[in-house]
Every structure is written in C-alpha cells, then in structure tokens.
Amino acid sequence: MSDTPKPPMRPATLAAQAAGAIDGETAGVVPAVHMATTFLRGADYAPLNGDNIYLRSHNENTRVAERLLSALEGAAETLLFPSGMAAVAAVFRTVPTGGAVVVQRQIYWGTTAWIRDFCERRQITLHEVEASDAAALAAVCAEHRPTLVWVETPSNPWLRITDVAGAAQIAHNVGAALVVDSTAASPVLSQPLALGADIVMHSATKGINGHSDVLAGSLSVRDHDRPMWQAIRADRDMAGAVLGPMEAWLLTRGMRTLPLRMREMSGNAMRLAEFLSDHPNVETVLYPGLSDHPGHEIARQQMKGGFGGLLSFVVKGEAQAALRAVGRLQLFHRATSLGGVESLVEHRHTIEPHTGIPEGLLRLSVGIEDADDLIADLGQALGQ
Ligand code: PLP
Image 1 (spheres, protein in one colour):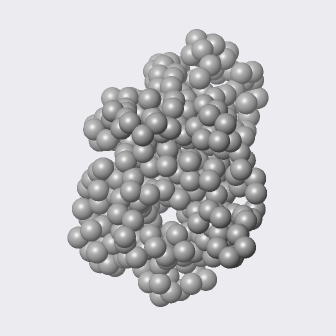
Image 2 (spheres, helix red, strand yellow):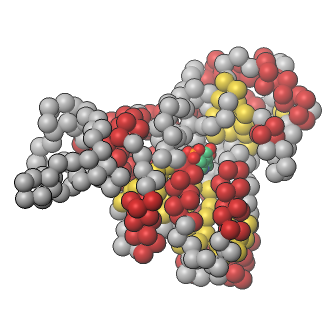
Image 3 (cartoon, rainbow, N blue to C red):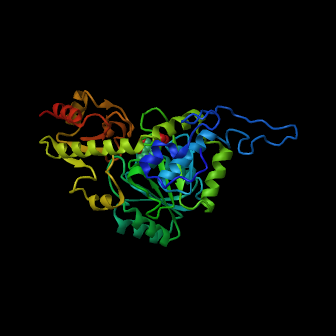
C-alpha cells in the first residue's frame, strides 16, 4: 500500500478495493490467506511481530475483513464472530445477571428462541415489544429501565421497520444501549450507527458474504471505549468465538461486490413486490419499498439506495396453496437463509409452526438473477 493519503472513498470504491487491502509481501492485489495458528518469538523470547502471537487473539485475515466492514458501516471498530448467533450471544453475555432487557417481538426466530432461553438461565427479565410501534417501545423502556434494547430492521420475516433514530433516543433516555440487527439491510443500505445506535449486528452469513458459503457474524460499534464493548472484545478473545482465516478471507472477497449485489437484489425485490401486489392469488405483500407498507416512510429515510432483497407475501388459500406454489417453483431454491446471489423461498410456518406466522406466508430472498425470469417463475407457480 502506498503512503500517499487516499481521497475519501464512497462505499462502492471501498468495497471493490477492500479498503486498500493487498498482499504486502508479494505485491498481490488481493490479501493472502494466513493459516498459521502460532507465531515465532526471537532468541530473547520477544515476539518477532508484536501484532501476531496466537491465532485466537491475532488473525490478520479477520483484521482485514473487520477494517473493511468498519469502513462500510461507519464504525469505530468491528469484531467478527463465527456466526450471527455467536455475535448475538456476545452482546447478551454482557447483561448483568438479574438485569432487564427489551427485545423486539417477531424477529428472526433463532434470535428470539436463544434470548428467551439465555435470559431464563441468567435470571434476566426479558420484555418483548413490537419495536416498530415507537410509543409501545417507549412505554416498556420507561417502565422497566433495561440496560439493553435490541431491534431488528427490516425484521425477518415480517419486514417490520423500526425507526432507529427514535429507538436510540428512547433507549438512551433510560440509559440503555441500542443494538440493531441490520442483517436484511446490510451496511450498504443502512448505517444504524449514524442514526444513533450503539452497536450494529449482522449475520454476515447473509448479504455481507453473499454467496451462501460462509457462516459468520459481526458487531460494529460507534464508541469503542464503552465498557460493554471492552467486555465483548475480551470475551471473544478469551472464550474463543473467533472466525477462521479462510472464512475471513472469503468474507472480504464477498464484500468486494456488496454494493453491486445489494443494488441488484433491491431492484429485483421491488419488481417482484409490485408483481405480487397485483396478483389475484396473493393476499398481502410485505415489502418496505411498497408505498402502502406501514414502515415505508421511515424505511425511505433510513435506507439509502434500496429496500433489500428480503420480501414476504401471503398466498390466498393458506398452507395448502402456499405449499403448492412452493412445490411448483423452478428457479427459487427451497431453502432457508437469505442474502445470497441465488433466490430462495421458504415456507416459514413449516419451520416454526407455533410462532404466529401465517400459514400462507412465503418468504423470498431475492437474488441477482434476471427479474423477468423470477417473475415468470412466480407467475407459473402461483397460477396465472
Ligand atoms: N439475524 C437475522 C436477521 C437472521 O436472519 C439470522 C439467520 O438467519 C441470524 C441473525 C443468525 O445468523 P447466523 O445464522 O449467521 O448465526
């Protein structure tokens, strides 16, 4: 890397050039993978490179990916984890035993299920609230004075939109930290830290990696001096929830095309949402890009350049009709997860039947295929 200061870079440039990461040793234009788990010391027993002693604490490939993610997110610091859930757990482990937390209702089911179990084991009082309703969020926070408020926007699979700036004010009024799961938006479409959130979390398994071949999670912070962040950093080091070098390297490679992919996925999802809205066999479409979505105005303000690739819709005729349509789809893969370049479809009610998900709801993760092909596939599956 040259020492000449670089001009300020916009997200597409930062991502394409991996925030300046190269292989300093060979002058390769992409960084090398460093697999060593331990590093040499000299005859005086001093480390030959003070930045590298043992892989659990010092992983160059992770540092490269973290720097890029921090630059994209506008964060003071980012920490990567071996899954999104490991990142969720790292945050909740900082809540004192006997404390109180407020968590958004009807978010990703894995997050809810783990938090409920964890809070019970640690005697933490958990208050679940519909956080897209600012008055309800404010009332719960004022009554229970939590140390942590957790929201997910857009939420999976309901596509509810929480006003991050408003939620930050509500949380801060009672001395709580606001953490935002921004997985469905990615750092390209939304930057919760700039809106007042204290920490932003991603399942980097999704859009950030984008190729359905890496499991990873991230936390990015606005102020790295806060004790909660120091505790998270120390816990990752000591408890060892770290990402391997190969996964970190793949994540950096995935992020190079993140702005491009998010733009394409958002454009495709918007086209599909419009198509489905007009379809006679569709009851409801949940997509924040639609002007009649209850969170549309807020989404327009806090998401830039698109509304993401996550979209749910309810088929008329309940589970039977929804499953019939899913079975007929030929391009959409029937699989869980989201944010990859290939489109996926999921019948969430089959997976989580007791959580209030409508039986006819299908969740799409819209990829970067040609939108006309995706529309034709949905059309034939829904019967048109
Ligand atoms: N948050 C959201 C919104 C998710 O959709 C997921 C996974 O689907 C997670 C967190 C958990 O991430 P991971 O599967 O990488 O552990």
